[in-house]
Amino acid sequence: MSNEPLTSGTMIPRHVLPLVSEMMAESPAVVIQGARQVGKSTLVQQIMQQHPGRLLSLDDDTVLRAAKASPTEFVRQDVGGVLAIDEVQRAPELLVAIKAAIDTDRRPGRFLLTGSAELLHLSGANESLAGRAETVTLWGLSQGERIGVLDQFIASLMAGVQMVGRRYEPVDYALLIAQGGYPEAIKRSLAGRARWFDNYARSVIDHDASNLSGLTSFDRLDVLLRLLAAQTSGELVLARVARDTGIPERSLPPYLRLLDDLYLTKRLAPWGRNLAKRVVGKPKAHLADTGLAAHMSGVTEAMLADVIQRPKLGGLLESFVLSELVKQREWSQTPHRLYHFRDATGPEVDIIAELSDGRVIGIEVKGASRLGNEDFKGLSYLQQKLGNQFIQGVVLYTGVDGLSWGPGLCALPVSAVWQYSTVF
Image 1 (cartoon, helix red, strand yellow):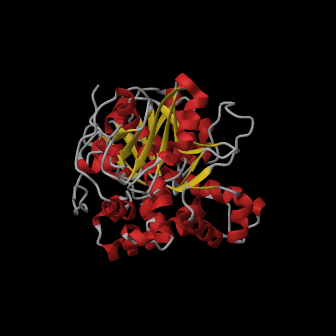
Image 2 (cartoon, one colour):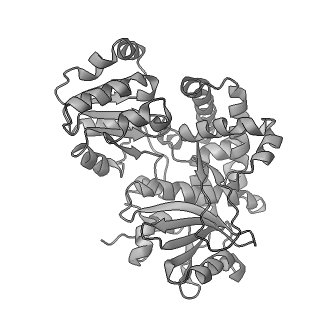
Image 3 (tube, helix red, strand yellow):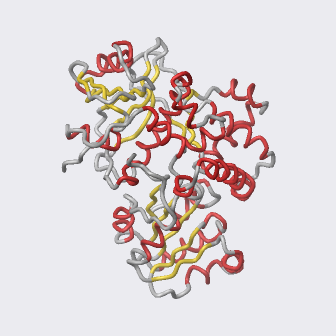
């Protein structure tokens, strides 16, 4: 199939690279945020080939001690160009020093920072970086990046272009879901990938979580992550999560935010525009990487591909589609925000893409290879309520044909998310 495992030394161009270069030409500081092992350091190395300067990693204990010993001198050192600091969240005090340095010299491209956590939630970071830095989030490899295609599904729907590329079967989707998007995991064999996911989750929880948070019971974090993995794409009902994990409901919010800050989870907010008097306001909780989600919930490739276990594909497939759309937002030429919709009377839509002008695209994700009118129920409801503000309703499924399902509605293979040809 097209998405073969990567080999050691494979260098895949990242779609955010032009965006980062543009930001560096205009802003004093650029921040690349994302989970560990998504390729931030590799991306920075590629950028540094085009920009003179110096790259320093705070994962090096000696460099970290130097940064903490004298933050002001550290950020003001003469490096002959851009100063790139990898894993800056390990020394938050540098952000205040960077603020002072920028306030005395606002030349663009002075600092390039990476962080394996949401920096704006670090103490003092919001004030330090506000108006001085632009931020881009790097997620795992998108399917388009893996096959060398600029994947922009929302923009492609708006342009009305035609789907191109090979046909995917359910077994293909099972493999892609189980691989996830971490470059190192994709490279590995089935057994090697399982070991890598075990070590990855343990490392992030034992080290990054403890460095970034005042929380002390990190065994709770592991239990919570495993529960969310098993229920990925489900609505986040705190009382139910508290019951299933044994974590008091009042204690859950900081743990949930920490998982978001580490880019391990992605919460999808509910969408509503006074369409109905009662809209259920609970977010959906997705693991950001489906390979990690499948591994932590004990779901194997074979289980995903086996027709008897096909229901297992449902939640993971929805998270897989969402993860691709979240990645594509970073470089999309059609700005939009992502939500989910559920009306208290029953109708729901898995993913809502709301454009900057308020118009909406609705996306349903089905693990089935055959569809019926019932699969369009939520989209039809939304279309009726929104009228001209509803651009398109799409049901993504594991079949192979693109089909019209009436005005403004269609069915497309899941692979259409990254196999649309882009015409601009």
